Length: 279
View 1 (cartoon, helix red, strand yellow):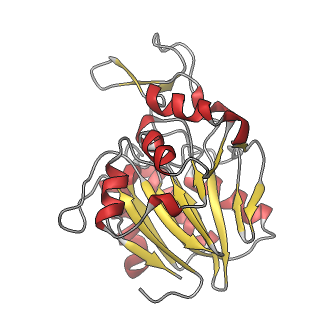
View 2 (cartoon, helix red, strand yellow):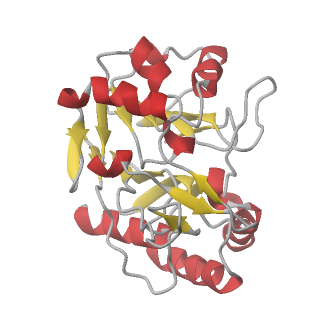
View 3 (cartoon, rainbow, N blue to C red):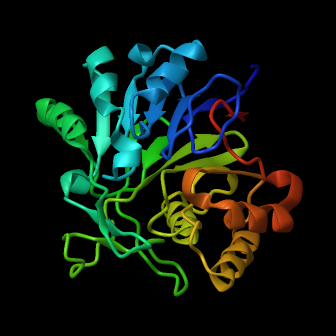
């Protein structure tokens, strides 16, 4: 694949893409930009590593591992990644280990925290983890947001998330973060689940990059449970913010993808396992 500034591929997603690749409820991206090889999230198992091998990618050569937040479907491959690449630079928020639960449609509470194996693997490299509690650059032209302020009236975490199995303490998922990469065409913004809200995320990145124009947005947008009102408000805000390409993945949901396609047409490239993108 011939690229200029950035190339990337979805290692794992909820949707099937290239024949023979695994899918699962989760997200993992491989990105090469600014002289760095970046793993962004690791899905809910080591399927991302298996897919990487099928795609000819050696995760042992990655320079950076960024974990967007502490949910099982974004951290499940951590143990295998660190086994293959024990010296990789890891970046995440300190809240990644917080116990978490999600209320299901039948009212049961499902644990959705980082799993024990991934947690143990991270604890073994605790002294070398780059803890992200505010915006920071992790390489030339590559930055991480840290916690994202919640400012829009219509965005929420996208689900019934709690810090206790009794469902009494709401989880705002404050560790949710995103990555931005500066390219000649503008910013490429990478998101995990956008529990802080897609519009909140984009506006925050614009603010901390002196309103640099956005070229592309790739990742999960957690619009799977969004109401028609929220979807319309999101689309309206995206028109104002502006972008050239958007690749909705993972938790965006069918209705979310449909709203984007109806509003932005050819700018939308739905994500799937094995789908690639470049700038």
